[in-house]
Image (cartoon, rainbow, N blue to C red; front, side, top):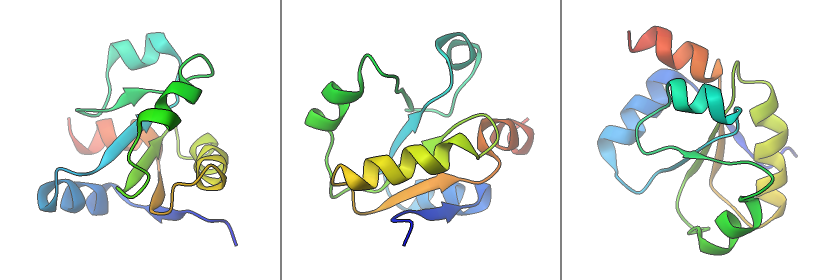
Length: 102
């Protein structure tokens, strides 16, 4: 079992409108994150990973975003192993999100 679920852009939009409890982490590089990201997303990297895990609410849904929805799958699986139960990988990543929201 992978430990995470796939999430479409439409499902994320619906989830976000239903609840403000969603945590979003963006694992792209800092420059890409600075150029644009999903509102309220946190840029997650090796330097802040331990701090994020220590401070995050493991019971709230966590959505992992990357460039195209590939790297986020392994990151979501890793975060699931760290104790996050309700975890998602955003299909299509930030590129799909930005297309849908442009």
